[in-house]
Image (cartoon, rainbow, N blue to C red; front, top):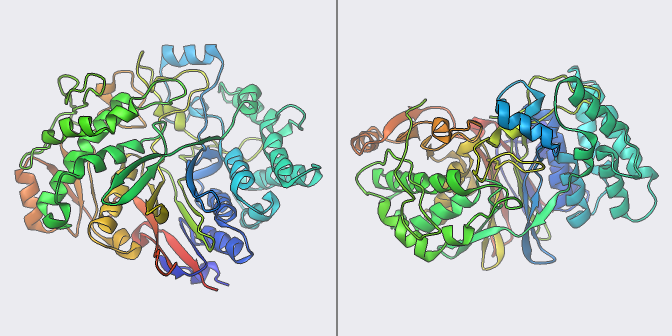
Length: 538
C-alpha cells in the first residue's frame, strides 16, 4: 500500500484513483478504497483529512459542494454542502445597514456545512462507518501543535461516540453523528452549545437554531451537451452554470482548428468567459430564494443571440450581461471598472464505476478554533447587500459560491471528473482542462500541466459591496501561462487584451479520466500547485 512519501502528482489505477491536495489526504482515500470502500467512503475520508493537511484552505467548519455519479442508479446528483446565513431578521438587518465584513470577523461565517455533507454522502452512497473514514484525520491530528488541533480531536471523538452509542441501522447511526454536531432535538447539544458560545463571544450572529436547521440538499445537476459529452455542474448557488453557458457559446467555433495555444483560441475562449461571467454576476443566486432563468440562459435562442457579441479581433472592455427574459443579447449599457483564496480539491473513482468530484473550502480566518477546534469559513462575504439582487443576503440563504466541481459523461457513463481551487478562477481553469481533453485529446497529466489562461474581467465573488460596479475587478484583463509564446502574447495585446504573463500556476486543478473501453482510471494534479494523485491496482 502506498504511503504519502510515495505519492506523486499523477497515477493510474484499475480499481480506483484519488487526486486531491495533500499526499496524506490522497493516502487516506486510497486506503479506504483498498479496504473495500467505495468512492463515497474514500471521498469523505479524503475531505476530512484535507481539513487537517490543507487547513486554511478548508476546515471542518467550511463547505464542499459535491457531485457524484452513482453507478447503481446510473445518475448524477449534486450534494449542496454549503452553509447558510443566520436566520434571525435582526442579523440580516445589521448586514443591510452596515455591510458584510470581508476579513477577520466571525460575522462572515455561514453555518458549518462539512459534517452534514460527510454524513449525508455516507448515508446516501457510502458503505463504511464515520469512525472508519475519520480515522486518518484523527491520526493526522495526533500530536498536533496548533491550538485548534487537540480541540478538534476531542470534537471528532465525540462524533464517533455518538455513532457508537446510537441504536439502529447504519443510516441512523450516521444521522446521530450529524445530530450531535448540530445539536438537533434529542441529541446531546454540547458541541452546538460550544459553537454558539463562540459565536456570541466573538460578536457573531449564528445560533444553535441555525445549526439545528441545517440540511444538505440533494439536487439534480445542471447539464449541457458539448461535442458528444454531457457536462454536469452544481446549480446557480455556485458559479458552475457559467461554464455551461461558455461551452454553449463555444460550440459555434472551430477551436480544434485554431490550435490550443493560438491567439485565436485564447481570444475566443476568453471572450466567451466574459459573456458567461457577466450573466453569472447579474442573475445567479440561491434558487430557494430567487428565480434564476437557467433554462433561458442555456437555451439555443439565447446562445444564438449572444454568440455574435464575440468579436474575433477585438477584446471587450465592457461587462455585458444579456436579457434572458426579453431574449435580447444585451441587458443594457455595459459597465466596467479598472482594477486591480483559499480552497482545495478532491476527485475519486472506484472499481464499481462511482465517481465523485468535490471542492472543499473555508478560507479560514485567523481563529484558534474556539471551544471545539472548528475554525470558521468566510463564505458570507460572497453574498451582497444590493436590494433586489439575486445574491442579496437573506435569512437562511446560501451565498452564490465559487466552489464548482465538475463531472463529464460520455454515452451516459463517467468520462472525466475535475476539481479546482482558486475562487473566480475555478471554472475558468476547468474550462481550460475540459477543452484540452475534449478538443485536443489530452490525458489528465497533459491537461493539468498544459498552459492555462484566465481573466479578471468580472465581479469579485468575495467583494460584498452593495454597488456591484465597485466589485468589478479589471476590465479586459488576461493572465496567461509563461508557456504561451511571445508572438501570441503580442497578438493578444494588439487585440486589446490587458495581458500579464505569469510563471506561477493559474488556479490549482486535479482531474481524472476513465477509459470506457478498458476501465483504466488516470488521475493527475498540477504539480506546480502542490496537487497529488494515486491509483489502486488489483
